[in-house]
Image 1 (spheres, rainbow, N blue to C red):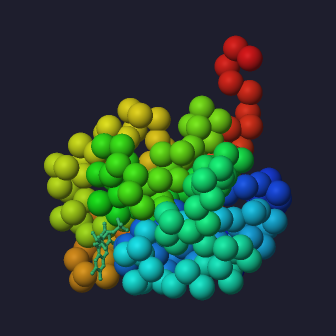
Image 2: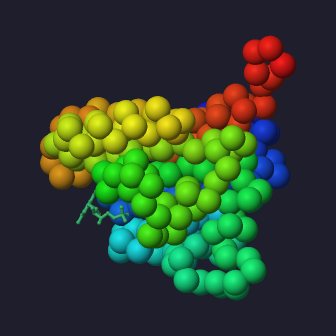
Image 3: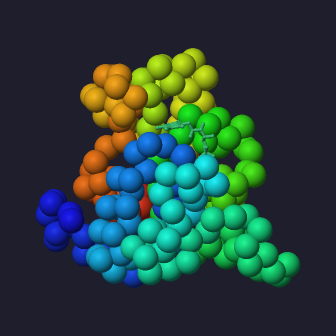
Length: 202
Ligand SMILES: Cc1cc2nc3c(=O)[nH]c(=O)nc-3n(C[C@H](O)[C@H](O)[C@H](O)COP(=O)(O)O)c2cc1C
């Protein structure tokens, strides 16, 4: 249940939002995000990497979103209308949460061999913002490769939601915690509102 200001959620009505779920321990928090967005009237499409499906089943996200989950790049692969192209074409926003160390590396190097990175690769980012919510163990977060990939992704125009600092499921304490569901919802709302505001000079 969302504990923030419900008036903020009005802008979600009818918005087409995709959520990419990767194989991070914090994927359970994303169930709350999908539920809140769907209750607020957004059309939510969840895409999951195959390893993410070891943590939370597609059935959970299908039930919460009320829509089919993209769980394999080979599903519904009609030649004229591949699912990732159709899903990407009308999106208002794509949030990847949790975004694993592995997914950061894929996105930073243009790889697209799973449903989440393939959807990201198919989005016209001039009109659809992509938000990344990285989450990982603090040692993984501090790896030069992770920080290098984050710098590349920021300069490529991806928006990064900073992870929190604190207790981690691996019994470490440090940076890399996925923000709570309400904070992720607020980040989605803020990104939608920012993309609606007129740009300077227009
Ligand atoms: C119990 C467990 C928890 C994990 N949690 C994380 C995590 O929070 N963040 C992360 O980057 N990788 C985590 N990993 C490693 C990823 O699951 C692994 O790199 C996986 O191949 C990533 O797949 P994906 O990026 O295709 O979703 C975890 C692995 C295990 C076994």
